Amino acid sequence: MNRITTLVLLALSLAAVDATIHTLCFNFFMKKDKCVHAAAGQSIRCDAPPKPHDKPVTAFVMQTPKPQSRLERRYNTNGDTILMSSGPGVEDGVCLWSGPEQVHPTINSAGWLNGVKTSNCRKQVYIQRHDEPDKPFYVPVLDGCGFHKTKPEEGCFEIGVTKSLARKLRRFPNETDDTPLYGGFTWDFNNLLGNNPDAGPV
Image (cartoon, rainbow, N blue to C red):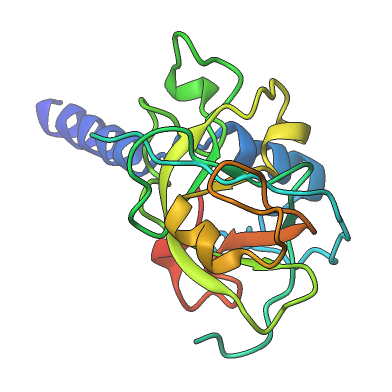
């Protein structure tokens, strides 16, 4: 009897270790599309059709503490691409939506990530201007940003960039260290073909 109990408990503990708590954004796309583009698992990864979006994007400053085929757009910004608001912004990188709860975040309230749920932190994403699909930048997720969004259908598409990356993405004279980037951007986790599963979102 002790042996059977031990085996059952061991099996249950292994199952618990394998269980992944997914973010609000991951779950939003699973529910909406029945798959998540760039997901690590082939059975849940999808290739959703491109969605045009031409609104501006803002840059952000992080808080201090070659593809095999043409990239297809998956997440298009809903507004200006912001500059990360604090820190020196010396490293190329992005911030993604941190979820609706900014004061007391929990694992279950993480948009793509937050201070409690950091699984997507440092994962590689690509970002490009809509009309420059052959000029992607591959950068890490450095932080979470609130973007003043409270719903996944708004926040999950948003992205902010460090000042360093914003300088490389600039194209218009009115884009400065203190202003948004305009013209619309496309981004996704860098696992479109399933050949970089470490970059797949959770």
